[in-house]
Structure formats: C-alpha cells, structure tokens
Image 1: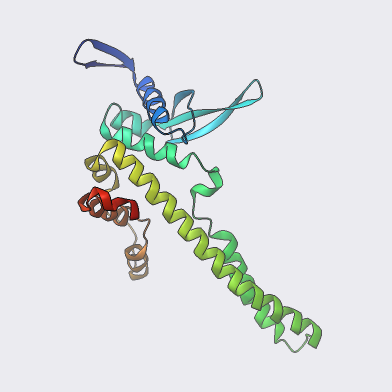
Image 2: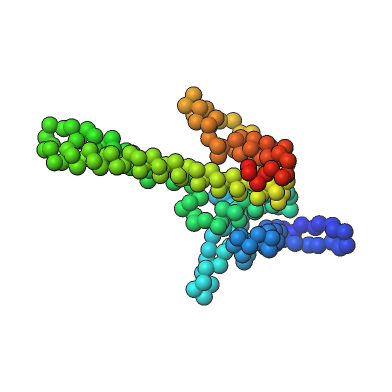
Length: 222
C-alpha cells in the first residue's frame, strides 16, 4: 500500500514501511546515540521495537513496526513519537526494557525461606548463624537492587517520553498515553499501585503536561 502526500514543491509516493525507516533515519541524524536503523519491517504481533539481525556477521538494527502502529499511526505525529521513543529505548539491552524486579524479589523471597530454617529445631548453631548472616546480607542488597532498578527504569522511561514529545509534540503523547480501554479486573490493591506508579501511562502523561508548562530554561532540571 502506498501513501500520496503533497508537499510544498512536489508529490511524493512512499510505502508505509519507507515512512517508518526514513523517520528513524532522520531522527538518528539529529541524535547520534540512536542506533542507525537499516530498514523497517511489519510484525503482526507485539510492540514496535528495534532488533538486530546479522549481515556478514555484523549486527544490523532493524525497526520492527507492529501492524497496529502501521495501520493507525503511519505518517502522523503519533508515529513519529513512537519511533523516537523506540529508538531511545534501543540504546539499552533488550533485557533492560523491563523493570527487572525478578532478581531483587528473588533475593527477598530467599530471606523468607532462610529465616524459618534458621530457627528450626533441627538446625545446629553453625547452620543457624550462616542462615542469619545470609539473610542479613540479602535484605539490604535486595532492597537496594529493587530501588536501583525501579529508578533506572523510571529515568529511562521519562527520558524516552521527553525525547519523543520534543520530536513529535505533546498532542501525540496525549493520544498514545491516554488509556480509553476499561479495566477488566482491578481491585483496590491494583488501583493503589497504579496511582503510585511513576511509569504508568497516566503518570507519564501528567509529567509531560507539567513539563510543557514549565519554562524552557528550567526544563534541564526536570
């Protein structure tokens, strides 16, 4: 499928995937930290992302665009927002695109196993001491790692949002971060957690709106 777009001087015919790859290339020329995307391809499921495939043994970045994004956001400000946000995240390893709470929570869960074992009647004093020392080390280490990874994910999410909004405008962010689908299952606990999640869509949008109202010379501290 092709799109016809009139410009000031001529009329250009471009495929939808060309628009996504060209947008990524344009953004990379402005921000050299972004990966240099070689091409774009349509993927039927999943989110838009950057992955690497090997050409002559060298990794080459490819922009994998979700079918939904192609059908809905091609040649729009929202599409440009998505590309910028995706390229910002592509600077980091894929395993860091999630908060990564598994390891610190596993460390804290190990403490719940060690403590009952330490006070079991079948455990000798040396084993009890070992378990208590291990638990005492795991608690602060697990809490520190949990806080570190939460903060790292938050900072990268906010940075990607800010870069995308600067490139595409606040209305694009509002369109993409405003949730219109009803929650099918939400308890009081879910509501409490979401109200305090700084990386939830509503919190991200609120931050961007507040940032937009902040004088430009003060944004460096936001």
